[in-house]
Length: 146
Image (cartoon, rainbow, N blue to C red; front, side):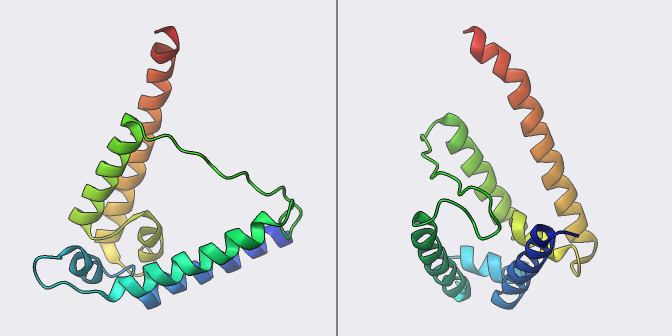
């Protein structure tokens, strides 16, 4: 096993532990966060603020380097256009998050302790991703011909 994979395992595990500790894998916490007109639970505000702070520092540090610690080139900053595809994907993501009370990252962590509900959600999420990819691949030739 290389250092790259050990680092990925370690930091992925650290991310998963952070999600569990912050309540990001508990659907009741997520639904409570989204229930702004009912019994709103602001617990996730701390997780969101902390993660935004950590990423702000990380991007500032990364901007000063051409290569990552393990030697890979630093990725360039993405510039996204707001288009129909981005808006539709955001809406679908938000609806899924609101209905299920969990999003993709925490759903992977929840596979270890969430029982069948987590497995069903994860399977549906992966199926949706594959269908979206298939749609994109089929729509690409039509878009190029237009």
